[in-house]
Image (cartoon, rainbow, N blue to C red; front, side, top):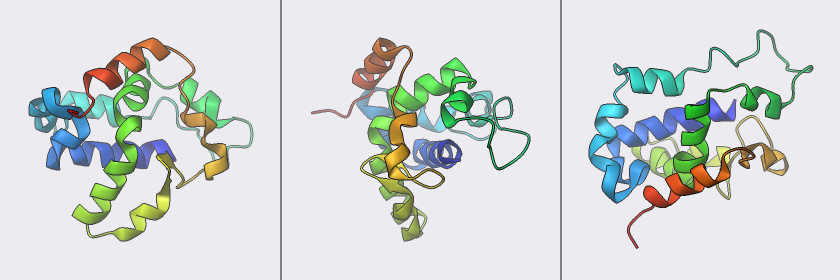
Length: 142
């Protein structure tokens, strides 16, 4: 799923380019919260409670899967990760010497598993104000 790849690349950027991932104020904690041995990254990357038991997902919509995700994970997705996701993918493509990663994002919307015209799953429907607050809090310096 797009969310899995996006989260892995976001955590990668927390470790290797924390200013990109967390902005000018919170970057110092990037290597700590992005450490694969820490509980924080385990919680964030864990999708075990929402990933379907079988594929293809014919009986679930992507919105139903995402709505079942934990609150904190989705808040980080929408408020912190998504606003910088295009830059995260481009950074990862260069850093990992894997230019094909650029094929999995279009105009800031992941397109690995879902086509660009289905990007509505990446529009925050709940807790928009909190997501917007996190976006402002972690925005790059002007």
